[in-house]
Image (cartoon, rainbow, N blue to C red; front, side, top):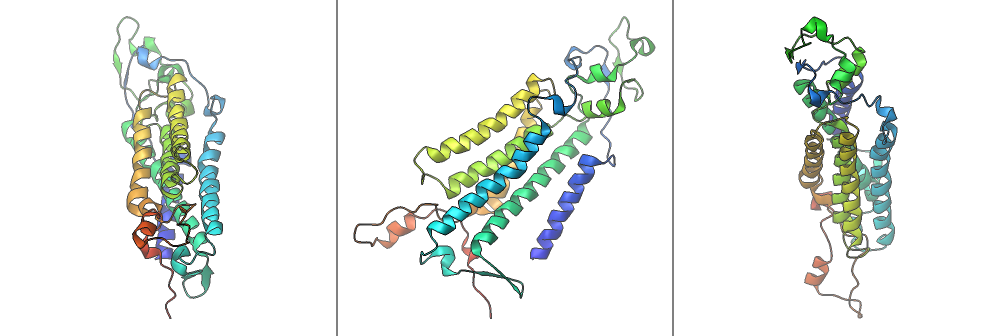
Length: 301
């Protein structure tokens, strides 16, 4: 089963690579109206010249989940290492016939593996949408540089559908034809929602009643600001909303149906009574759903 999951993850990574870094797939060629005011915004230039550079975005998307999830799982393990019911009283997990893995390591890789799969899925879904729609960016005419005289648009606003109507740089024109849905908005919201739900499920109110919600809202709000920034720089129309919806929907789906709310107990358990005992029902209420029952680590003989 593990090898099958690795194959799926590798296939998703390969498909995302073909969408992102090759010319295997071309976007649909949408026509435009001469001097359309919604397409004549100034060219914002390469992505590297924006307020939030791609290298910063991708570093956060790739690094923050690793740091946050690994850190929280390590804290859970250290605080409850001597607990009688830590990971259902099993200290190792057998993988195959030779490998013995600590449950904390298994959980960490499980959550990060699902996250990476969702990241590739988001990229593939958004890239496919951009190729199918071929939606034009607000600065399209600034990089297209159409010859209005040859197109007969000097006195009338004609609709132009010729594939060779543009005289500008081919790479800039291709970039301006791939804006819906917004990939940057989707890749910003996806990790924010995924980590926000992880924080609520595994940390909850352990650090204070408002600590968890504050961290989660901060992640989501920061991701939303990326979409607003894209519109302010005339990189996208309101299609950033579609990208945000896609990223958020994929994150929610994976958390709810795949990792099932990161089922395991909270980082800090609630205190028992002074006598050191508690009622069984009360003890059950002190645990949250952060680990599945299927994660019992029994070693078959």
